[in-house]
Length: 115
Length: 116
Image (cartoon, rainbow over all chains, first blue to last red):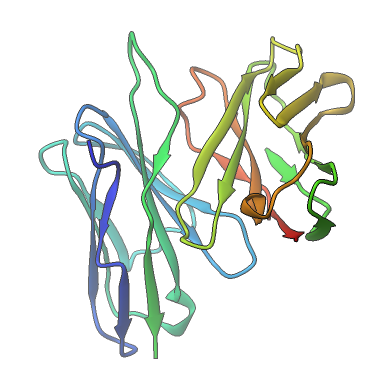
């Protein structure tokens, strides 16, 4: 078990471009969360999945953001027409819910810089 | 609405000193979970503790201890005999209801610097 893995670790993109991030959760975890963290702030919730179902989306998640978890395993977060305000660390976490439960384990994040 | 307040933005201590990180929360739920996470320079959030709202017993784990007081809506974290490796940003977080596996609401964090 290698923990939660996020790729890429860093991404620099020009304003207006689309970017996609990937998160591979801990293999047996059925819940997957996306958070965004800007400098000097705590992580802010964006969206989460139970298996392949997207259960909740934050108001922070504008129409330019979309997340998927097609097979209930890895997830992707896409940002279309990036803006400078999208520059942040994007964190993924996973957890297990059900008869046996775990706390949320976080990945190392993808740092996005929009120039 | 839920809110977590960590009033201390930055704290510096000399190695071996004790340090307490404050956390105050707001929620309308009677069932909720409180967490502490550590974020070292590498960026990965490391889980430290989860406590449900029905368990006000204080907890000690090695040099770490937590004081949960429902009457003051506080969940403070103390590091005893601090070490340089404790230097990190520490986040307090709140999760509503259920099993604590609903999305977390984080405070802004407290940056702890332990000086040798």
